[in-house]
Length: 347
Image (cartoon, rainbow, N blue to C red; front, side):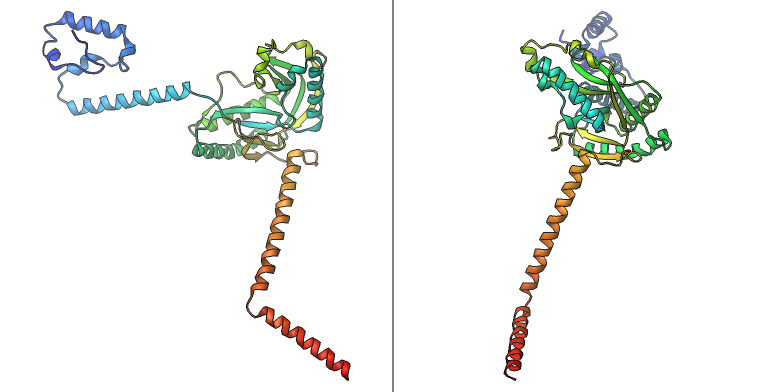
């Protein structure tokens, strides 16, 4: 007997269903054994033959069920294809910290030159607060909106206080990623709260955000995935002995002053930091001195202002020269002055 497709029963099968219970039982058994062939196998197939006084209601419910299942399939597929391409970054720019990491990196490279390509660049140091997937420009704008909405929640958590992040010691993930640890202390709970409220704020916008594992704040300084060819050259893990001298080293403290929405894939900025879609400033940054990123932005702004001023001056001069009659009046005034001077000389 030819087996009908999912959700479909031939008319003669419906007419003879009471006479062919064995065939029906065999059909149902076959259906349960092969759910892969029937995407809607959870629907009771006998409902297709049921006579009812409310066919329109059943039809409506059937369509609603199918739509619901279709939406669930799309959602599951979207989650299965989840590949983060954006993240919330807490930039780490304190000279004491970045300088200490540079010394650490150089110490490792001196022991194994091949690991130079696995090092994170100077301008890229950060703590990842949240990862997410933004498919297009509209979703990027949603992400920007979520980031802006996040600011008052963070300020409420901090209650006007600065969040100081101290870094001490070295850790790793599976000997594939090396990072500077965030030291234990009272700063941990507020940071975890901020990460959780960020995740909730972005997810409420319909954005796929967060990871399956729990949030563990860390400052990455090297990762083997930056140089896949290392595995072919026999470097399959980071040997902890390479950084054992720094295992308890205190790198310094950074104040949380900014959170950026950054792209993992777009071209980095000239200072080595990630492409930034938007930022929020939390309180005021301590220290008084601008960091490298701020200096770069200030320099660009000064250059742009100077160029605009020069262009405007050029346009003004060009317009003045092209005004009708202005040139001739200037010449007339000069001629009058010259004539008067000559007459005065004769006197």
